[in-house]
Amino acid sequence: MKLRPVLLVVLLLSGFYYLTTHVWSTGAVSPWLHRATPSTSLSATNTAAVNGPLGTFELTEANAAPAYDTEEQQNIAVYKKALPSVVNITSTAIAMDFFYGPVPQQGQGSGFILDKQGHILTNNHVIDNAQRVEVTLSDKHKYKATVVGVDKGHDLALLLISNAPNLQPATLAESQSLTVGQRVYAIGNPFGLSGTMTRGIISAIRSIRGPNNNPIEDAIQTDASVNPGNSGGPLLNSRGEVIGITTLIASNGVDQSAGIGFAIPVNTAKAVIADFAKYGRIRRPSLDIATLEIGPEVADQIGLAADYGLLIERVLPGGAAEKAGLHGGTQKAYQGNMPVMLGGDLIVAMDGQEITNAQDLAAAMNSHKAGDEVTLTVFRGRKRLDVKVKLNDATEQQGQAGRET
Image: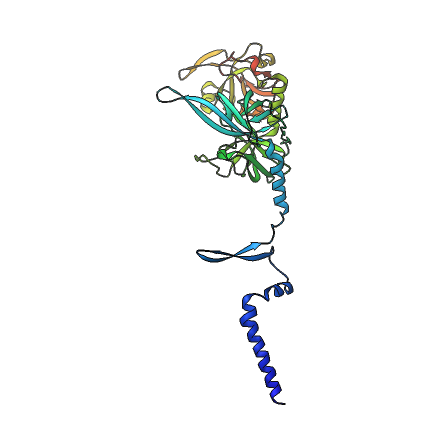
């Protein structure tokens, strides 16, 4: 009777030895343990063995692709909606080599489709001075493009391609109520890598200088990565709608992204497109004057009532300023070797916005169109006046003055 407990202990020890040396080591019991213990991993995995000359590698593989999270789904939705509207633009210009032989030079940029007729919007600097412009759609089909119109002041250009079927126009949003912190997406062809999307936020809305030192009012500053080749492409909101046209980067001397890019607000582009559609050209507003920029030193020398502003040297005959009763200069003088006319009205503000130099006036004019009425604050001698002026169309007076505004 005493032998039975001993045999039971031996049997238990033998069974434990078998489990630990044979069954456990082979992993046969692993599925049972996995069933009994809830998994805490993000996705189910299995192990696959790969045999080769270097031995056996055990790779951990996911059983299935994980579902996209909400943020990823939004990114994908924006990309799928906008990509068919984005184009790659190649411009070819002819330059002269050392021996005065013609050498073709190519540049690249981006743009986006406006309508099913084939109108495309891009930056002027993408196609400036080009002898040939070619557009490549997202489906890789290429078309020769015609430059319909340019607005160098806003760095915008309108192109047209013909006989392109099934074009998908971009959806244009509003840019008036954009907010710092709002998520944005840029799609374009940086360094020629077509169909590239980057994401960021609106980091500021500010006035900047464009590629030709032209003022861009309410430019959209973003940390979305943009590089050479992105110019002319759309800046999008989280619904895939165009809120701006990518135009330049702050590169600190390096021709690549430094984390700060700028886009022209889409409302500016809408105004330009409207002019192209209605008049076939841009109707840039003009005061029809030639001016001299005033600083403290010049103001002190000629005894002006303010030490800043723009002195009207000349008003163009029949122009906006002359019709409003503004006065040009009557006394000839010299600034260095350059002749100037003194004695005219000194512009110091427009619609209550201080005008200290020509850039301020250009920026203020960019928020208006031909036919708008503005109020200029001027000094006539020591008398301060507010004068209402109806802005003229600059092209109507083109070429009549050397430094018109």
